[in-house]
Length: 396
Ligand code: HEC
Ligand code: HEC
Ligand code: HEC
Ligand code: HEC
Ligand code: HEC
Image (cartoon, rainbow, N blue to C red; front, side, top):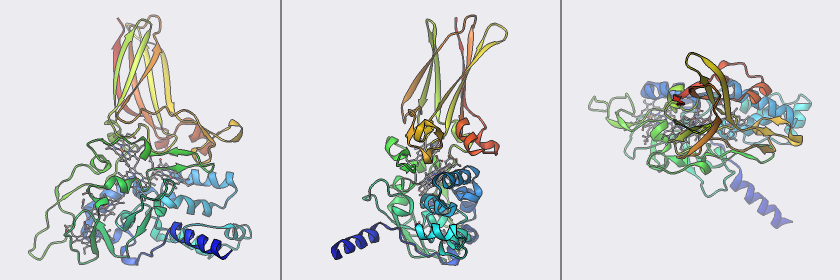
């Protein structure tokens, strides 16, 4: 018995995420502004700054839906999602005692509620998430993500890409995952998200194909001349550095989507061929489960449209009994129809009698019809179709 207890204690000690409290002077991006204004502004426009539930309708609705369907308290689900969406939260799990407290309305003032309401985490993936990672544990099995895959530096030590940086406000330390091994940093969270039934519905790490470009080359842009801080050195000058932006543009930004796919059309006998080529090292759509590519085809005769066709490339999720659900509650997923990394996919459609040309338009949508309707999402950004590319093909 004793041996078992000791083994259990050791296991929990190595697997439970360790909380390191962040002192007030480093908690929010506001504190970095005096010396890193440009970076803070770029980050504020990124979706990393919206990864807290109060700033993302889709995330909030998903969380509430998961709580309702699994009969857990909303706060327990918040703590679970915080693993990646809010990894500096001061409570890393909840237990049955907490659930009972919630049922009896005795949870007010509890540690869990305080941790969730703490203003320090309202910024989501902010500066002290990435820049306070001390070590990334890639030796842990692939289900350990977010706060369960890292340990934190002491409050006030910022890790970065420079080995000779000095700051009067904080300590600095070099890390290779801020430099040539930055993929490791991204995969702390952008991998292996699982449903309550253990179905892995997104895993960028396994679909990823190594190429000459890293995640940061595209999502933080190339390294260009600039300065990491506006604070002047002793000689009165600003130190020149090679820097990147903190914009992290992705599927939520229409300008980036235009660089993802190229389109080729041809026809043979009674069929039209639509080839979509993905130049990225990850799938399109990728990341989160219910994204969608829409291919609209318009058939024309000499003067006008004669018919239309639309193809949806997305994934559908089902729970027990085959009923539609969201990715986080899924038992099963339909086939992955995304365009694979650095690869292409060819679709075939039939010609329409009388048509002498076709217009093909490829759009991206953040959330497909099914999940938007289950969650009753209101904001137009989830239903908008963003044009990626389009082409016309003559049929004679
Ligand atoms: C998602 C992770 C992430 C977040 C969040 C983040 N950074 Fe960074 N930061 C990086 C990476 C990666 C680099 C290294 C970029 C490179 O290759 O030069 C970096 C570089 C820097 C640098 C060095 C200059 C440069 O561009 O290389 C400073 C200073 C910095 N970050 C400050 C901040 C501040 C302030 C915030 C909050 C507003 C912040 N970072 C948020 C990942 C992050
Ligand atoms: C009083 C000014 C000041 C404040 C406030 C400040 N920094 Fe810095 N920071 C600096 C200076 C100076 C450097 C060194 C820049 C260089 O060497 O080019 C620096 C460097 C960095 C680096 C790069 C470290 C490396 O080794 O690569 C990071 C990351 C960073 N700061 C993050 C932050 C974060 C996050 C905050 C807010 C919590 C913050 N800083 C607040 C002045 C400041
Ligand atoms: C601590 C976890 C974490 C780390 C580390 C992290 N991310 Fe993220 N990232 C997220 C979460 C969570 C979101 C979704 C936020 C939302 O939509 O509410 C996100 C969103 C994004 C988006 C926006 C996607 C879109 O659909 O628009 C991009 C791009 C991105 N991350 C790239 C990166 C890159 C590149 C790195 C490595 C330098 C990185 N992230 C590191 C958690 C993380
Ligand atoms: C060659 C440039 C390039 C590289 C390298 C790259 N991306 Fe992307 N990424 C894009 C573009 C363009 C999009 C927009 C198209 C899309 O959403 O698929 C995107 C989309 C995304 C999204 C949103 C995906 C979705 O459909 O919801 C995330 C998250 C992301 N990238 C993270 C990463 C991470 C993490 C890495 C490294 C492992 C990485 N990217 C490497 C260019 C790149
Ligand atoms: C393993 C890390 C991880 C965990 C745990 C996690 N997420 Fe995420 N989540 C991410 C990343 C990374 C993204 C960004 C992917 C992208 O944009 O393509 C994301 C994006 C999302 C999005 C899309 C947001 C948008 O603006 O489009 C929703 C919704 C979401 N997560 C809900 C949840 C919920 C609810 C939970 C808890 C039940 C949860 N996530 C737990 C990593 C995680």
